[in-house]
Amino acid sequence: MKVKFKIQRFDPTKDRKPYYKTYEVEAAGTDRVLDCLHTILWEQDGSLAFRRSCSHGVCGSDAMRINRKNRLACQTLLQDLNTRRRIIIEPVPYLPILKDLVVDMSDFFKKYEAIKPYLISKTPPPPRERLQSPAERALIDEAAKCILCGACTTGCPSNWSDPSYLGPAALLKAYRFIFDSRDEGAAERLSVIDDQHGLWRCHSIFNCIEVCPKEINITWHIAQLKKAAALRET
Image 1 (cartoon, rainbow, N blue to C red):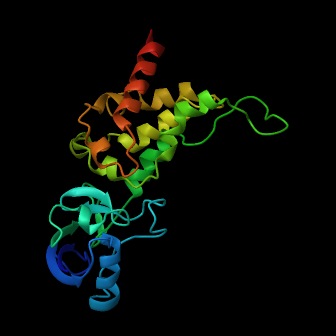
Image 2: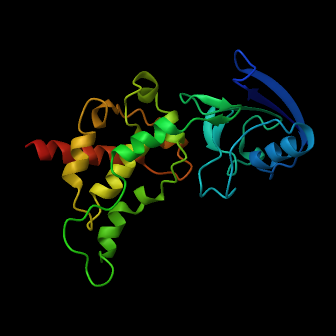
Image 3: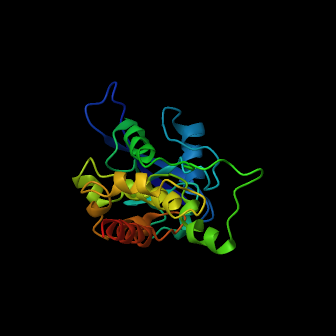
């Protein structure tokens, strides 16, 4: 079938503001949006800029706004879109545009680094690996699936209204380490996230859950962090 892609274009070196350009691609319903973007790039317009790496939903680099919703281009099939014959492609919102569908992730990763996303241990390492039980691992298993695509954070209205908000992705990573039985840095991280630009800026809007390509219940994890912060204060 013939599919029209209305793609937002913007080159800050020559454009005053973003504009849309339409491309037509011959595609099947089982084709991914990423496949069609490759066709446009390789056969129609080599100036089109977008990110992608693994192309299998692991790296998270090809997050973009597809038909007004944050998604991964490599996971989105044409047949799963309501309007399969006319598809709108835009960069994820909130972050500065470097070119076309490529956004500047510097602020996103700065907030991610703020929660200390690594194992903190104050005791000497054991002779072999640090063990944990299946139950202890299950507590962080879902949070560990985050691929840092940024779909949740850029799709969060609280983030749009507060540039200092850490965002759901950073808070989810904080949960992943705070509730890790091998980690000893919970107090340090809670001090970082327990303020008006951290945990308490989350208003449980659930946009993060709606757009997460790994179907992580991010709002639930943030709620557990709020409980931990409240208990810490008492």
